[in-house]
Image (cartoon, rainbow, N blue to C red; front, side):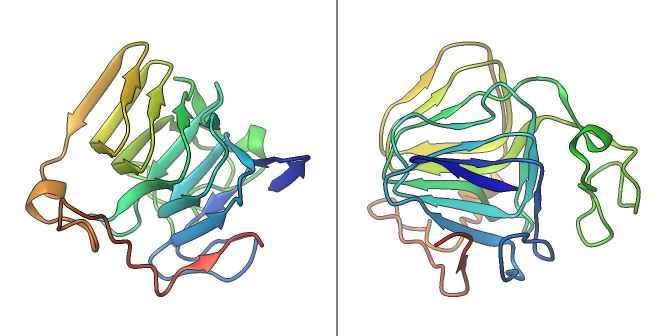
Length: 198
């Protein structure tokens, strides 16, 4: 779930998808906004089948944190991750997400995982990685061996400190997501989004 210790919020052992939000209302496009108000967030051992928007995270917030993570947009040309207002470290492990260890079904019928599909059991293991567009208004640090399928955009520096394998998806250039068509300004259209936390 999500738990907070001081000014650090940890998100783990959950599936966020268009039909699954353990913290409140669901969003049919899987767009979930977390307004961190300067707190640090650590995201690990979970699957995001949607678009995760982190507003105002503390610098050095971490996605992966040395553990497995699976992120991909539920709407094919949408971003998988948008960070506004802080530096973020992306440092997942290369290990897998093991449903039986996490105690959560990460591919129920409404959230299939290619190429496994969907089911009602806890028997699957998913590869760790991020698919989709990653956008940040600040610095992005890729700190462990990262495999990204999609594109990376940042208004700050992009630092790579290990092997970085980017399988570029030109879809994001040919058919930009909503709000990403003007290079001079990034406007995020989140009229239908809901806050995950208050």
